[in-house]
Amino acid sequence: MRLAIGDIHGCLTSLQTLLNTVQPQESDLLVTLGDYVDRGPDSKGVIESLLKLKESHQLIHLMGNHEIQMIRALEAPHHMDRFLSGLCGGRDTLDSYGGRFEDIPEAHWQFIRSAGLYHELDEHILVHAGLEANIPADEQERETYYYLRFHEQEPHCSGKTVVCGHTIQGDLPTHRGYAICLDTCAYGGGWLSALDLDSGTIWQSNEQGQSRELHLNDLR
Image 1: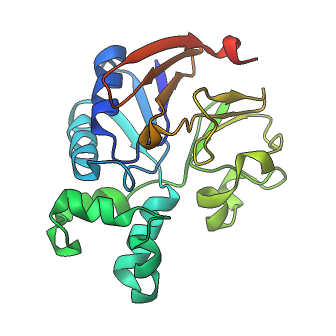
Image 2: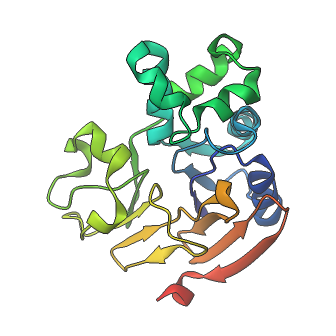
């Protein structure tokens, strides 16, 4: 199984419910699409859970715009106000750690800073936000990986399906054939979504500990 997991946003119960439902094996590939922090209740717990998962599974974690905003807030004071605003939700992240940047363990900073920009497979390219259509995946502007909106995503020149998050789609992912968006608003009373790229199975979970299953073909 090769599993892509959408934007988690501090929703630890949703993440744990998803993993308990899917039961990934050590040989499976797990790719998280970014936005581990902000808005949800337990960003610290989410990163702790992913760090633990990395010890036993093949986990590749990608950079989301909320991680890059967190890094920029630490490194440049003029970014701090945006990070702590309700728009970003950084206050929720700091509260989960105890209230200050100084309370964030170095291992968590290493996890955030080491996130990849994208991950390319034989038929898919996984990325947080999306890719400009006529530019190879490894030549995109940095901000594109973090901020491109799904309505701007066009068929990529590689011919591969782009799998992303970042742009909220409502209760269900969106499948355009050439692109799939898995952001279903886990933090806002919605669902955390994950897609098995091999079988097309989609699992969803929420903060109430509920889960459900559907198939990629159900979205067409």
